[in-house]
Length: 43
Image (cartoon, rainbow, N blue to C red; front, side, top):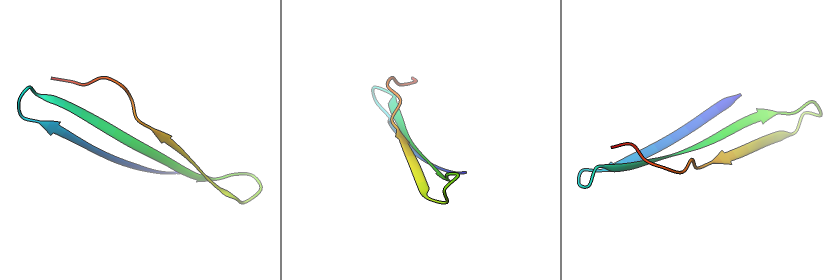
């Protein structure tokens, strides 16, 4: 499995976000991926 991530944050009002893509090869040998964009932020 390969995991790619990226994120950012604004200095004011200190809100940020993150995105993730998980990539893997299934049992039949085909590549699959799952995109995730969690809601919320950390300040």
